[in-house]
Image (cartoon, rainbow, N blue to C red; front, top):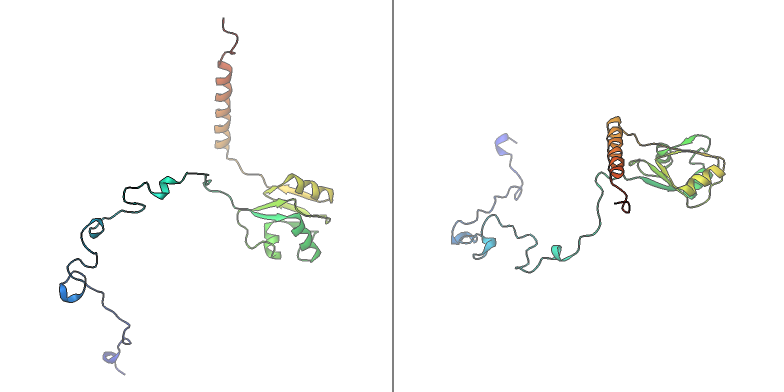
Length: 184
């Protein structure tokens, strides 16, 4: 075999169809675009156009709201935690956090943190570190003799100053308004 004898397999390379090159090509004249009209031209932006009728995406009401940069937490119930302790997948003596739950196979990935919910029973004395815990979950863990540490969100000093400034403005505006019935 020589370099000049190397070829692609038959059909591996296919030349593109050159449209608009005469009747004999099979895609001449209108070039596969049909006849006249908006779609025969370049720059077509029909999208949801329904021939002048009010399009579906404008007929349906806008509902709801998607929060920007929404946090996605793993949600774990007390029952799941107790089952993992019973199955010896988690050591109740060690602190439990997202990393421990991932290692135990209770949650698949860390996501943005952990939220503990109060469904189910817990009897093990556990120390849990979470981003959020429901009131019933806190009560149940503390009743069993365990502790819950809630990770506080960090607030930057600049943001804290902004909040204080806004609150002061609101208080000042409320104090400046006279009472409704005391006009003489």
